[in-house]
Length: 229
Image (cartoon, rainbow, N blue to C red; front, side):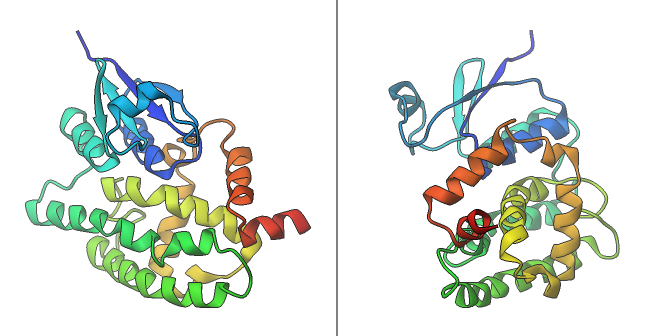
């Protein structure tokens, strides 16, 4: 008998979307329960040591942390999203581990959620340093092939970065920073990911409205521009 899979999710969480992209790429049948992270139910806190989503229940047994879930899914289901070559696979894992540095403190998320026009220039300068490292890595890992991180096939690196690039793209529609113009590899990679239904379809039906509310709750400059438009 095949296992049952159920994902505990939050509507706008990018780390959850990482798991969903991998499951969609592998054709895994799964159910979803959405929770409010501002009012976490006790049953969820009992299964998530950090109080974070995603949690993937496999026959009722909870797995937590998006990286661990992605690795589990890749071991269990074809097609494999990690490269077969051990060195390339290790490099992919390393660039997946770079993701928190890329998006946080300061990184791409600080642009997406920038609070005001005055802080935007400095935030962009800091993000450019991380974007340059990633742009160089994409060029090295995929060579002249594309459109994904390693070339023509989706990888776990793609699954990890795509949700954050998607959220930046939404904010960029009003911020108009043209930040990715100086990083052609990242720009082309982002465009390919966001055009792929495994990514675009990996969000809840009400994602767009809830993400706008998230921008508003966080007091972002992007929301100010949306409201003024």
